[in-house]
Length: 399
Image (cartoon, helix red, strand yellow):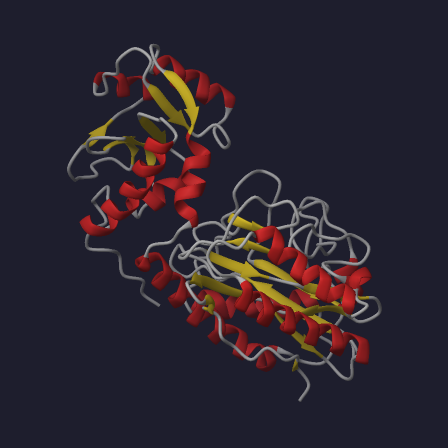
């Protein structure tokens, strides 16, 4: 299989001019509102957002004026305002700031030693936190970003529809996950599961069979699993898929740098009526929240809608886990899997058109496993539009 390279691969900025300006202007408006005169960006996800590619270096974006792209590697990138550097101190040769200028740095994700070094690059300036500005800007997707997410969703769905063909009796969760990973990669999945922060790690997604879905994980995911080694304690653990088990599949949907997040529940044999009912409640929660998530609605209110529906159904002990409960039912998604907004009880986020949200109200039923679905939606004026429209009922592997 031949993978062609971009004809513009030597350019520092791969976004077209109009899309680049849309993203930069959105960020400039936030900078102006927060009294930041400039920001300096080096995080890979943020670089990808601002340029359409990842490189070793920095994007310097002033609130007024053109961006400057300081590149260490790869060498010989071209384009307007591209400056090759060997060390960050060289930035000062091209950026001259007045006393008291506020420069935003990515304080949430940059190591302390790097921050200390960058502060010395701008000795007369005040330092602000650009991480929150970037998170806010990226929470509202442009039409081009939404289309990329939609395209990832189409391939994501195509992989999930093949899953029943991968199953053979006596198969373990690891063996089934590997078959799904292989199919995903052959359809163009990048394999990368980009996550912000240091509190979560995952390889290609999560597949949970039976009681393993009830195993608590140290990571802030909706579902846990023991994993196959303490160095990565999450997900499939070698469980054999038996009759009466559910198989919850929450696998990688990154096909172009923008992700969809989608969960479907599969099963072998007959599962309990309680598990079937909980799965139906998950779907009902999706329908209700999709209709209620109008512009201006608080994300905390959406969380409480889901939690109250679970309580009314008598399923609160199993909602978002059983032995350990997740504290959210949805999250923003795009370049990273854990973007803003967050659908959680104390979230301060408010729904805005253009937000892309993965909604995942799930249940863990002891003796059976996890049930429920996850879809990726884009917020519109009329509610949430589903970007992963695939059959939602439990899919039986042994039919």
